[in-house]
Image 1 (tube, rainbow, N blue to C red):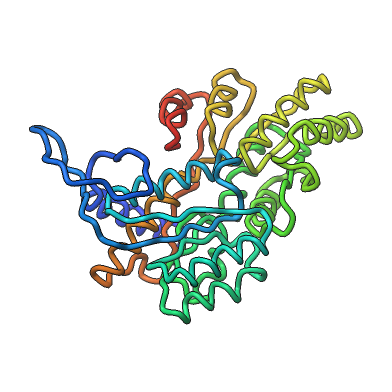
Image 2: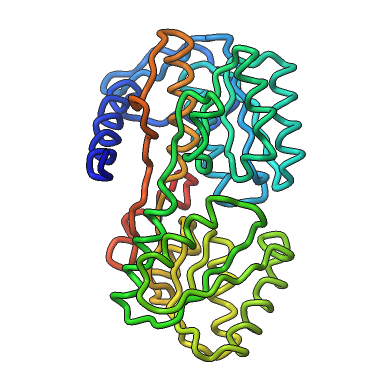
Amino acid sequence: MSRGKMLSLFLVTAVVLAGLIGAQCPSTTTEPTKSVAPTQGTVPTQVTQTKMVIGLAVHSNPAEDAFWGVVEKGAKDAAATYGITLKSGGSGDPVEQSQLIENYIADKVDGIIVSLANPDALTDAVKKAVAAGIPVITVNSGVDVYKELGALNHVGQTEFVAGQGAGLKFNDAGAKKVLVVIHEESNIGLEQRADGLADSFKGEMVRFNIASTGVRDVAGTVAAIQNKLIADKDIDGILTLNPVIAMAARDAIKAAGGSQKLATFDLSPDVLAALEADEMLFAIDQQQYLQGYLPVVFLYLYKTNLNTVGGGLPVLTGPGFVDKSNAAAVKDLSAKGTR
């Protein structure tokens, strides 16, 4: 199926879900709320106690990673809407992430949401959950393998296509040599983004691995990128794959006295401010709030009504592009933790 038809399918799905979900987002909580009478002119929030429990296991700690904090907020908001108890956790160590899935299996949860940045390390745990009769939905990473693992669906963006879009943007900006900053080892999604840029970018693309520092040591990441820019004066563009790394790259450009064109994957309030200040060229938005929210809705509908979504295709949440022209429109939402 063409990418245009896939995006059309996503849009139809989103419209249908909008009618199901309602027009307002509830407050963030992991526990079901008590029934309240709606006031005139408001949309009542679903607060029925379902006694369902869903586990979220992602490849970073949501409490420490701004991107995954938004994913977790989406899952919490959806859980509150449908009276579901959400168990949430994550780790950059695939062994720890796999153990988290094992814990959910032992707890006999009603569904599991998992990101597959390292599919090989998580295959056994995911297949064990499916064999135990627990429905699994993958998010963010894993679009190429979710079917063979038995997951119901995948919610995210096609990373290679998003990377291609970044390459085209750098072509339009006149860049000749782009540094792609890889901040995690063995993350298939990050590699697909880099591959996509290499496919569409007319100039030279250089991979730069900073996994030894990454988001855990921002000062070390700034120094590493700064040193790379000083050592290679031909680099005139930088693509980061995380908003925290994006701000480190911005600081590195300033410290090195450079003028490289900077772009990133994913949003944060700092990234949007940098776009408004012309410190960044563009950001690729995969709407990660939906990667938390939609799987909870899908699991609820599957458990209560045997509904499935996507017709054998992933549900796409991106890519979209944010630049100076539209950054202000999403800045307030990002500050609230939903973009």
